[in-house]
Amino acid sequence: MTDTDRGPGLPLPPPVLLLIALVLAIILDWTPLRFLAPPVSFNPQVVIGALLVVGSVLLVAGAVRTFRREGTNVVPTRPALKIVTTGPYRFTRNPMYLSMVLFMLGISLLFSLEWGVILTPILWIGYDRLIVAREEAYLSAKFGTDYQGLLQQTRRWL
Image (cartoon, rainbow, N blue to C red):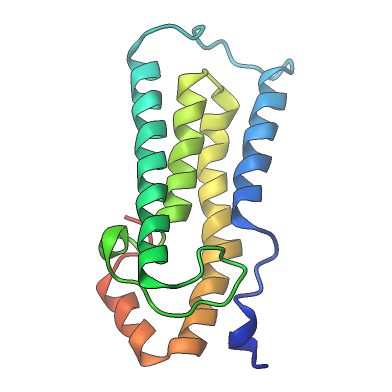
């Protein structure tokens, strides 16, 4: 079995990063380091947060549906079976991870988790460095010039 048959060798399942960031935001929000944000009520912040949450769920659902339709593994720790360039993958190479970042920001705005807003860019960097960089190296090794063409054609994030 070659390295490309084993998967990208991620340090942890990607949703775990989101869970860690959310739990940390909630814990920090309960500490004396808490900022003085307005309580949760119907305001523009809550509307934007709700829209981000709904949008992130729709984005990840579209990405998962596209992977299943194309016949490749949805779970990123398993080997990739093919390069997907349809559905949301026409616009971003990482719609699932992008949806997790947007979900973090949306939940943070929805529930006035100031630390969640602060941790969102850190989560994004975590996905970019810990997950996406490894996946790109793995996919380049497995699919060669086909994947290199995708790197030139489609943005990593937005």
